Structure formats: C-alpha cells, structure tokens
Image (tube, rainbow, N blue to C red; front, side, top):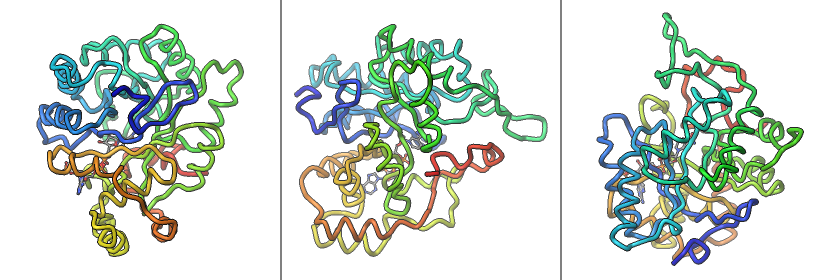
Length: 324
Ligand SMILES: NC(=O)c1ccc[n+]([C@@H]2O[C@H](COP(=O)([O-])OP(=O)(O)OC[C@H]3O[C@@H](n4cnc5c(N)ncnc54)[C@H](OP(=O)(O)O)[C@@H]3O)[C@@H](O)[C@H]2O)c1
C-alpha cells in the first residue's frame, strides 16, 4: 500500500502526508533504542508517518528501524513519510543545509519527506542545543526567519527534502512567510500543540484557509515531562467528559482524543513506545464521533498549554504558537 492509498491528505505542493503519525520524542532517561523499537512496531502495525527531529537525538535509531522495515520487505521507502526538524541553533541560512545533512547522515536516508522549522525562535549557534549564559539564561540569536525559509527552499530544490513547513508558528509568523517577497514554496504544514484542552480553533481555521496542513502534537496531553510540563496541569486522559464519550463508543479516551483531531481536519501525531497502545492507536480509523460528540469536546478547551518551557519565556514570541 503506498501513501496515496493510506489515510492521508494532499499537501499544497502535491505530496501526500498520512494523517496519523508516530511521535518519536520522549523523556531524556528513556534509552534511544526504544524509539527504534517503537518505529519498527509502528510500521508493523500500519503507521506510515514517523515524526522525528534533530533535537530528539535518536535519528540513528529511527533511521535504522525504517531501513530494517524496508530491508525485510514490509514497506518501501516511498511508503514512509518521515519528518525531521531544523533545530533553533541552525537558523542562520548558511547552517540550514548542514543541519539537514547531519540528520540525513544519522538516518542513512537520501531524503526526508518533510523538513520543518522546529520553532519561531533562534538560539545561539554551536554544539549546545540549549545555550545558556553564566547566569543560566538561554542565549537567543536574532535571525530573519524569512532568510532561514529561503535556505529550506534551496534544500527542497536540491532534492534533500520533498516538502518544507514550520512548527509552533502563530498566525502572524505564518503570514510573515506567506507574504515574503519572492516566496517560492509556501509552508505545507504548521505543527503545533493541540488537544481538547487547547483546541486552537482559530489557528486551525486560518491554516485550512491557507491550505496549510494542521499537524497536531501532544494530542493526548503530552508525556507530562517534568522538564517541560507544569505538573499541576490537569491530566487530559482523565477528563470525565472524554471518558463518557469513550465509554459510549466502547473505545478509550486516547482514541477519542485522536479521532477528534482527524474529524476536524487535522493530521495527528501520537507518541507511544508500547506495542499494545501503538496497535490500539491504529483503531482511530475504525469508528466515528457524532457531531454532538465533536461539539462537546470543542467545549472542553480551556487554554491549557502543556509545553511551557519557562527558560524561553523572555523571548518576544513566547508562548510559541499562541493564536494571535
Ligand atoms: N514540534 C514540536 O515542538 C513538538 C513538541 C512536542 C511533541 N512533538 C511531536 O509530537 C509527538 C507526540 O506528542 P507528545 O510526545 O507530547 O505525546 P502524546 O502523543 O500526547 O502522548 C502522551 C503519552 O500518551 C501515552 N499513550 C499513547 N497512546 C496511548 C493510548 N492509546 N492510551 C493511553 N496512553 C497512550 C504515551 O505513553 P506510552 O509510550 O507509554 O504509550 C505517551 O507518553 C512527539 O513524540 C513528537 O514527535 C513535537
């Protein structure tokens, strides 16, 4: 089955993106090999979209897993949609292709299907992924993201990546790229935090109107990593309303949260490194929420943002991917 036959959307550049993707980022303490194992299990279960990034530090393992599934005949390279992300220490245009080439070398792939700007803020270039000054404060860099975008366009022209997009951009930042004089390719997607407690309906509508795929992360309420997530935030999958809808459909709250995104026209990522839950997540295609269920879930939105990283809070664009 190639990508055109899988549950997928057509991107504005004509390429095809499967609407369900496996997330590969996890907590620091989890061995990188687990991301490789999960990738193999997910491909066996029917996942065709794998979401990765330079930042996650596991592209060697994820690439090995993808190549193993190609080698054993489960899939061909064309069946797989792999995303990588340009980390924020590589925003100066002359560093963009270098960063992509490092990812490709780690993955041992000739191209990635999608390369996206990880966030609308630049950090001081160098070895350190989170550069800090003597007082422990994050060191930002000022780079014109339109120039970064032009370097991504050049990577597409060079055949190193099929599609290019962004992540954690708000409407203003998307408009900055869309209105850039001489724009060659527009972003095919914007990948942002989204779930029933932060449904981002305005940003979703804006992206739809501009033919930008709306790709959702932390759809299950994130991994509640102490380094990124305020532990006092409510646990999404324990929400009683989601629970009642799940019970009615004889599914789990997780499946309801994933299905919600598909029915509103989003592409949904889900991280699981557990075989049973990876298989369960494929059932998102096996049932439908009613219009009333959708309306009820829409009503749960309450501006809970799980991905708060306070060291970034002094940046003028913080919090990232806020609607306006
Ligand atoms: N662009 C960005 O800035 C950005 C930021 C954050 C995340 N992402 C991407 O989005 C992906 C997903 O987001 P996320 O990592 O925040 O997590 P998530 O998809 O919201 O998942 C949260 C947790 O749900 C559990 N889970 C998965 N399936 C389940 C099920 N059926 N029932 C119950 N629990 C289930 C998983 O644990 P188990 O593994 O134990 O199943 C996982 O730890 C990331 O891995 C990454 O690829 C991108």
